[in-house]
Structures are given as structure tokens and as C-alpha cells.
Image (cartoon, rainbow, N blue to C red; front, side):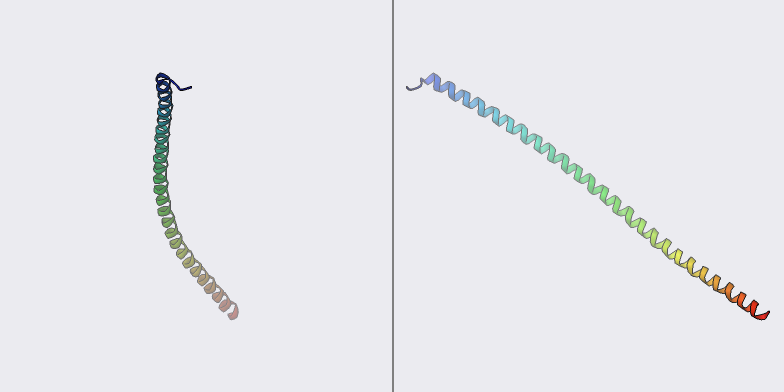
Length: 97
């Protein structure tokens, strides 16, 4: 049995309402996804800035370590020289007795 034009119109109207609701839901989903993507992009920028700061701090720390390492080796050499000088003085003093 064929449907009447009013039944067909009602079915088409219902189908359009369902499709319109789906489109609205998809638009909302797209907005949510775009918002999430924007937040992740912002978070990524923040992490990159933090990484840049950490890299600068690491470079500064490594430079300080190099300076202190050089100073430490200088101190070690001076101390070894002082010990050798004292040892030679003791040897000379003991040899004279």
C-alpha cells in the first residue's frame, strides 16, 4: 500500500530532524576536537619554552663545571708541587744530619 503524501512528508521531516541533530552533534564534536587541539598546541609551546630554559640552564651549569674543573686541577697541581717541595726539603734536612 502506498503512503499518503502527508505520511511521506512526516517521514521526510523526521529524517531531516534526525540528520539535523546528527549534524549539530558532529559540529559540537568538531568544536571540542578543535578546542582540544588548540590546548595541546598551547601545551606544546609551553613545553618547548620550558625545554629552552632547561637547555640554557644546562649550558650554564656545564660552563660552571668546566671552570671549577679547571680550578680544581690547578689546585691539585699546586698541592702536589707543595708536597714535593716539602718532601725535598725534608730529604735535604735529613741528609745533612
